[in-house]
Image (cartoon, helix red, strand yellow):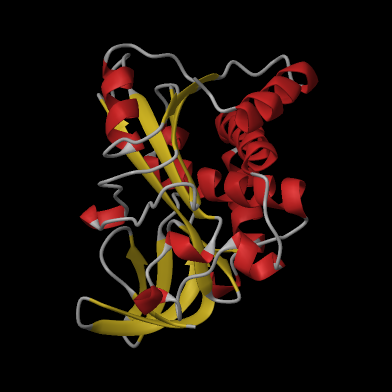
Length: 259
């Protein structure tokens, strides 16, 4: 059963936004909301199914990394999307759209405007506040789905002390408790809207992401034994890096950022 605080906020969202088709499934503890949502998506779950957990015992992020998910310390959820069979529904652009949406939701709920870092990080003052993961299922078929996972630090206890220098939390930044219900509701509404925007006008998503990501231009990065200076993103969502031999497109891989 969805906890009362989330149920009240989602109910209010339903009244305010009757156009949203959300089906929120609550779990006290799961290994990973991504795994649960992916299994449901594979079984035909419609766009708008959301798996939320109070705790993840094997939460994961990009490139198979673990994501700390202690009980009641963060917001952990995954949303099933059903993008159409078209080029602008690519995973990189969906990831960028999700980042913009998470930023929108945080700003709407709390008045805080985080920054975005390519490809999937949400930052405050150069420290990681949230991570986003998008995984495709049956991509290129009429059954294709994308599961978008969000891990958002609410309390400082959501991450271990040894990463405190590069991580932050909403309560740590604001100096007060944060109600997770209204925050989840605003992020879900923003996700719904930004995914619709991506279908209509990918350029609007790219513009919003670029405006929220100062590190995408003029920041030194190292990857695969190379280094260069970021020069924005192209229209496919790839990171552009200016090197001694010219401008390169980075679409995957591990980057070291010198923010």
